[in-house]
Length: 396
Image 1 (tube, rainbow, N blue to C red):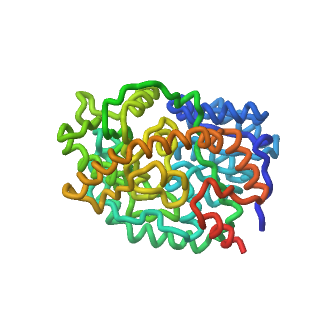
Image 2: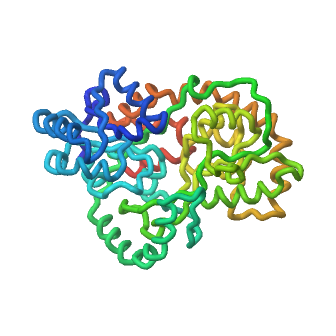
Image 3: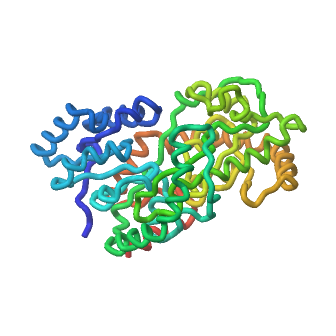
């Protein structure tokens, strides 16, 4: 049975207030939704009693479809009493594996930022295709990182029992591919300007080297709970940084007096423009990430693995490097090759820049989302050859 149709412009979008203050993307999306006439409500979690009361009143008095977006799991659970009986909602997932099962099971539509969320549910791929290390170390050091490292072994002890329960949950599912929609993140020229920055580094890395989560989703094995799914980034950067000054110039935030990735958007963009290559991986979960788009739009080619599902243009902008199959002996020739190919790869990034702004303009993406909800396929330029075809075949 096909889920009820929803209209993007006629829905009530409930967006996490904290995330909206912290990062650029929610602000751009909520602004675009308001431009289209959609109602947007910012929600700040269980302590937001005014927001809870307003949403409860709207839910009781109206049959308007609700879309949950940029909410953390705790914020989402605060909405459970309101949605439990009413339902009539959809959910936008970024890190889809962390969200409470009830919401993904009961949602009319699951709107995925990363295509791997669709691929895993359709049985096209495993969530994690390369086993991460058993031990976890937080870089930079944080309270959550330390807690995750301490809980890693208890999580592994519980893994078999929890995965049996997840298997039972999956057996109770009837996968409806038409419920699985794709909405990648947007980019805009205003946030990614080109300037005449002098190049200071040959290779740099601006992201996190620790990606640890509690695996709540039924399609993500509990054995990956608190495993570092970004360890491949750490390994690749460790291999590269040993050649800093011999002969390459390498930016590694771990060697700063206050070792953290760039804290402001302007610092991040400037540092990227000052580099020839950016280290970029989607982690052991093979995700297509906004950094792939951002680096390309800033004219900076990447070194790292190719994406499995999305961003077919990336092949023209990357030196393929799979960290777990490299060692100190193999990495130096790869870095030499990268610098030899740099002029061509940079030209490819600049060639794609305007097209990426069009493909990932927020209103175009929202139009694409509405078209999917109306039964149309994902346009082929967003996915690698064969990916969307196999997804549509699953509907038959």
